[in-house]
Image 1 (cartoon, one colour):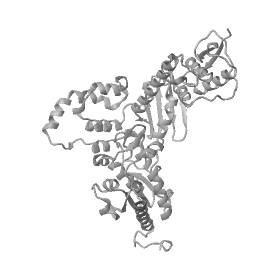
Image 2 (cartoon, one colour; image 1 turned 180 degrees about the horizontal axis):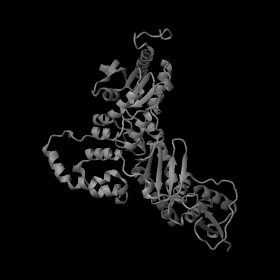
Image 3 (cartoon, one colour; image 1 turned 180 degrees about the vertical axis):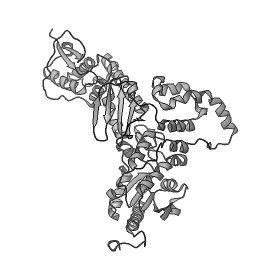
Image 4 (cartoon, one colour; image 1 turned 90 degrees about the vertical axis):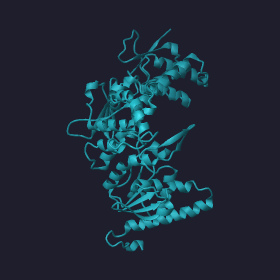
Length: 480
């Protein structure tokens, strides 16, 4: 029996495997005729040139298993995956439906392991500020179990697009310079920076929200295995928090249910600012590094628009689409706002849009993520970010879209029915109107049309106010 040796790059060589599969299928070479090896693995067999061949069409579920499977550290992964592809393309198209098949069972287990490794990497990578002249570079050390560096890249680019960062691992390194992604050689733990000042503030926040009444070490270790602890700043606090949990519960029972005055989430968040952010980019970097302060969310959704916009719109929080795309007001409510802005003569590109809460809070119901309204405490957590954002944008007019935005801007809960219209937010002229999502929830078309017309009138008034002379309040001739 003639054997053909296919040599692939060490690690997760998805492109090389795809090229090999196309050629092998074109040559009708069965799995038992193939020997798979890595470029640094010795072999007794000669090399084989992989030539160009037409693509092959795989079911989406099989293609996804291949993408995950090549990331696994099992040295037999390519042989197993080719067996799977061969069988699917040779009469067993529904092979994945046979869960009892030994090959399906093994490949599926590999994919689950890789997914779990990716999830842990997303959760446990912690960036630290690098030393040197450029203080806006960050680096993180992480030790994955499998070859997931390239597969994890889209997540970190989407979440930390505005940062210059590097992730160092024993299997390779990955660098994003705000514009392009590049991969480098393996690194050592000592190549990563030591603890920075941000981590002290993060530990303070972690300790301030730690609930001693819900301590469950077994569950904590299940979600955060101890092998990751040495790379996580908050874990230095865990032993002491667990040791004193019973005493703290007794104190909580004896005292009133009030926030401690010496350590609050707000103070802890402010402590993360080792230096006052002077630009929106610096502020966004801090928000991204702080991570979600509400349950759920995959990334922070920053404000969007020119830095000296005439109008700054403040909504409640990102929705499902905003969370996925990393941009504010791109979901159904955002599309309705766009429509009304166009009709009112407001150019979205010249306005600044943001949210009081920077992460998407939701409840999982089946495959759907349902919006969950942020609590007053959660809005308060995010208020320092919003106030600093307001200070950096310095708009002529601040528009509060909905009651949550009013709460964030004023610190007071006020019904829209009482506050709608012109307002004052600190030193800024403001205007209060409904959130466009309110219009989407109305029960019948007649009510929707009436409410939309009122919303449109608000936006026309907002447009005029933003064009008014700041000294006299007079409108330009074009707006009269």
